[in-house]
Image (cartoon, rainbow over all chains, first blue to last red; front, top):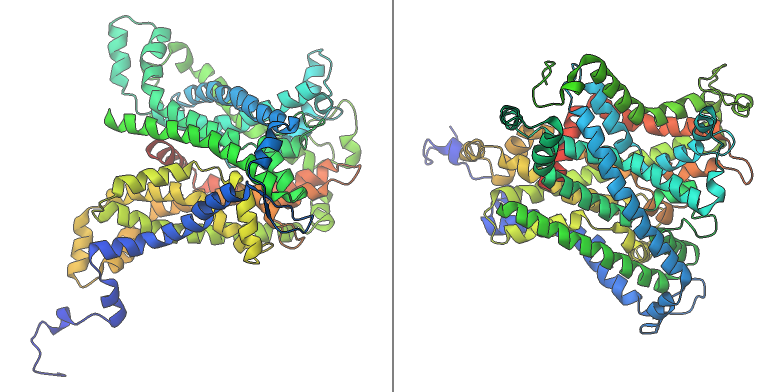
Length: 312
Length: 284
């Protein structure tokens, strides 16, 4: 009724509003537009900081002194090599990784095998794997610090009930370290179990039936069917675990604060201490570069595993 | 899952009593620490220092919960944690929906390269960027603001959420979108009117993962937001310890309060969370 000069298809071919037309781009422009927010965030929070990290590590930049940044070349790295605390915290981090990653794998595998049994109701089991995952690491650290309390902790209470003497966990470097590792294994094994469980559920039943026919025992079936087919899930779980383990901070910070002395301090805690407590940004950066290099190695392995998986 | 004992499982373990024992073991392993903290939070200070220690509270009291809120501004910690987690979840979802759509639907030349990059970023140790991020936030005057945490937390969850959404979007038939576009929708219109609603479960799962990630984070919150009114829950919760005393019942009460929101979330959406976690882990 408005204008009779336009054809009847007017309704459909009505030109879109200006901004809609602007958004109706070709694929290439649209891709740039859609990926721009991701690129911007990654540039701001990862790429620029990584460059900045390398740069700062060559400077003497201490906010407490109030002096401007001074280029010192490799001095921070030289200092680091002769710094016993750097070696101790790095060793602690590596040791935590060497103990808790296989530990979480073994416990996680056991939990996954148990959880894969044909239960009538699934939710209690599922929930008991999710709760440790969802519990913040810092909370887990506090809760287990209370578990391992020398006077009123439940761990010593259970030990006493079995006629064993209680342990003063946080006074000795070794016991404190053990308590931290046990806590990390408990906290992380559930995530491992969830990943392995998902892998278990993809193994076809027919394989076991065929093995039954061939007369293979249950234990042989586990080693020759279950475990080989779980390899991809286990690999992914292990790599994720290794990378997060290199960043261990929350649990030791909450349980021991790094003590006694620096015996349970991790590299992440030492970086935090130098940066936030001592405000020595130059040295903190040099430490972080080491950690960055360590975890890039693991990521490289991860990408390689994924690529070989895709080629299979 | 069927309740029938299946062939292929060790026959010992498919028996009913042993299945029951396995369930008990799993539940104790998963729930005991949280339950123990709940029991502790209901005990009086006097009961706590009795030896041998009691397991169940004899004389349950809620006074520790009152003290948890009066000794420290627990409501502020909760509010800060909630707002930071919520804002970073929204931002993560918005950014990852756009990016994932481009990767799933537009035939990009560098798709493989971009995906590899995103996978590499998903394992990035944000801890190592403590110094430069601290400098950036200081330079932008963002220390002690929610934004100082929202941006890094978004990047923390962005890769996994993007990868998850890519696989969800790929499962939606293109015809539906094409139909919408013939009806006069633009591509972006089709994305938000057709694809996102169809992928609502996936988007929602990605959101829960992002929320839990943000709710858990401790190191950056500890380093960037130290002002008393801007502390998040994990940072605030360690303030209950006095110089000499460690009021465990009060700390336990505060922990219980901090666990409840996430616990509610995973109780309601447990199936989705599990599928999201394992998809992110295996496909990612």
